[in-house]
Image (cartoon, rainbow, N blue to C red; front, side, top):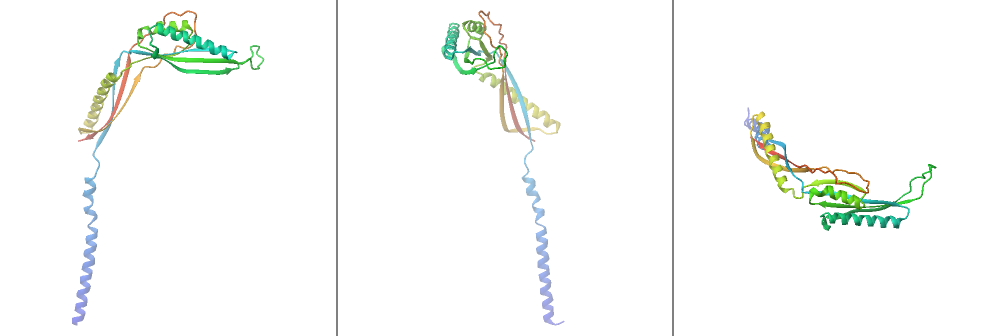
Length: 249
C-alpha cells in the first residue's frame, strides 16, 4: 500500500470516531435531566375545613313596622298614613325607644284599581295605596312584646319582621374561630395518620362565618286593642369555618 493511501484511511477513521463520539455524547444528555425534575416536585399537602359554633343571648331586636292606607283620595290617604305613623313613633318613644333607633325604610304610593264589586269584570274606581315602614332597634329586648302591642294600638297595621340579634359579635366570633381551627387540625391529623403521614405547618388559611337568627314574620293587620305579644328571645348561634392547607411530612 502506498504512503498516500495509508494517510487517507487514517483520516477517514478519525472522522468516523469523532462523529460516533458526538452521537454518544448527545444521547447521554437526557439521562442527566431526570434528577432535576424530581427536585422540582411540589410538596405534599392536605386541605381540610373546620367548623366551630358559639352561643349567646341576643341583646337587640330589629323590628319592622308599617302603616298602609287605601283611599280614593290620594291626599287623604297620605295624610292618614302620616298621622298614623307619627302616632306609632310617639308610642315607641314613650315605650323607651330612642329617636335615633327609629329609621324610615320605605314610603310608596301606587294606584290599585281592583274590580267592580258587582262582578261585572270591569275595573272599579281607582284607589290609592299609601304605605310607609320603619325599622326599629329595641335595646331592651324584654319590652318588645309591649312595644308591638302599643304600636298596633297607635295605628300600625303591618309587622313585617322581628329579628333578635347581637350588636357586638366579636367575642362569640373569636370563640367560634378558635373551635374551627382546632377542628381543622384534628381532621387533618386523622386523615394524615390514615395515610401513615404526619401534619406539618399550615400553608394557607381561609375564613368564613355566619350568624343564625331567622326573622320572625308576624304578618299584617291592625286591631283596636292588642295584648302584649308572647315573644321568646332564646339564644343565637355564631358559626365560623376555616379552610386550612397543611404540609404533609
